[in-house]
Length: 162
Image (tube, rainbow, N blue to C red; front, side, top):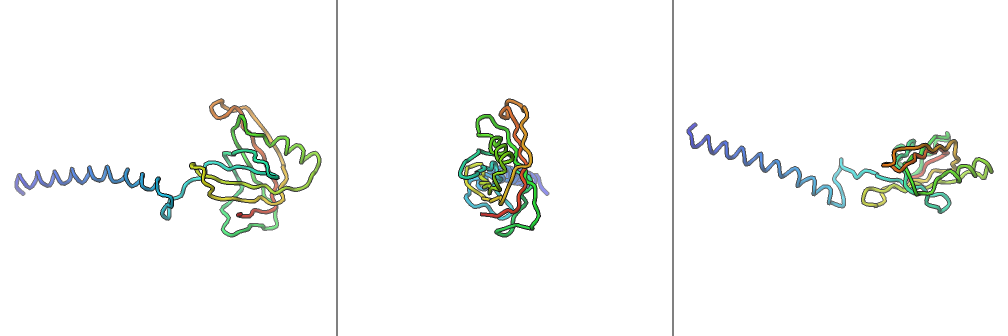
């Protein structure tokens, strides 16, 4: 291979690397901006709003016990545990609702979970059927995350994808 061919090959390799460096970020920007993502990519749920009897109790950071619901309803006849957790300062606490429900035994309630992505678009809505609080706790947390950490455990008789 002659000297000119080596320079040409080296130049082509450099251009190919440069094109690859710019193609990947451009593709990722395209994916993030597109309203519908291709299979294999999904926008993560960033917050879940809790509604009980039409009252919005604010956003929760974590929901444990809700598995992927493939059909419109999951009701195995067994009571399952669902845990809601969040760091908060100003959102209404579930304390009074849990206290009144456990004290007065006011009956089972349906709880609506509205899951949103980072853009605030609704990505799923679940109905926790016939719920009652099992435990509620609050503890001090880092001020950067809201100052308090609230956790409520619910006994749930069924889950519906609304």
